[in-house]
Length: 330
Image 1 (cartoon, rainbow, N blue to C red):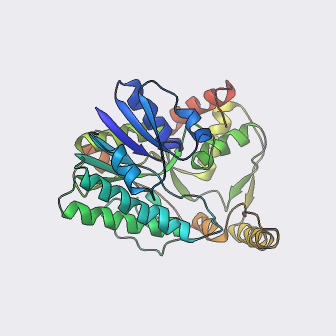
Image 2 (tube, rainbow, N blue to C red; image 1 turned 135 degrees about the vertical axis):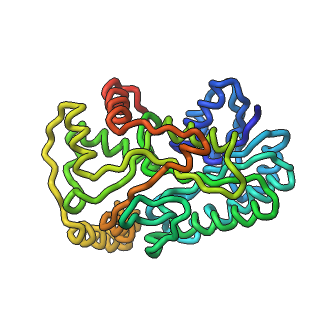
């Protein structure tokens, strides 16, 4: 089979490209620079230089492909030009869908984020539950608008479905899109010393191999217009770090920081960012998410995609061994 992947230099995209290529499939990978392309050296991976703005590049890349994985997005917590979120996440998705329609691509898998589904209430979030809280940032809102666009194309007959990864971790490039693994690495080295709030807020952590399996399953049997949560195990911050402590033997002391204090710190960072023209470490709107639970239910993907979840204990053990053996790269 032959596939086209946007966002192929990201954490998920690069792992997906290599998994498909290692399995004997031909992969066309959209990349912006030669530096970024260095991680995609493989005899079954063909590099396509361009951006989501270049419609002709997208169409040519989709010639004679069996499917498209659209993962490219602007997911950074801050942008000097806020219109980037809309241009890349929404307009870029429209460009991909239009190119796929014109080239009569058989199947498209659109990668969104579990963040668009919103925080959880009394029970873990599923795909059919309405979002009850406003969006926290431009990334969530523009990805949500892109999802609506994808569903519109599906209603018009396009074979396209949506996947929602949660907090992904595991082996791969240590970039902003692999921030959970960076956090694990920093804890092992004694550089991460905080727990947001009282440590009891819940999140969902998914091992990278499961996310790749979910993408491939969605391409094979995902239904048009449907959404699939690609989640892992629900765990509190305290449980997450206690698991790392137990598995690694590292007993670094962690300090619980009230969310209000974190908010104050990020506002100071925003002021400094404007004064010296540099990105803030984390904008206040992203810190607000720590005030909520983010539990997820992946039962639909398990039933329809034969999706399987790696236990947090196993996934973290694998990740810790990988980090400690010096296999990571930046």
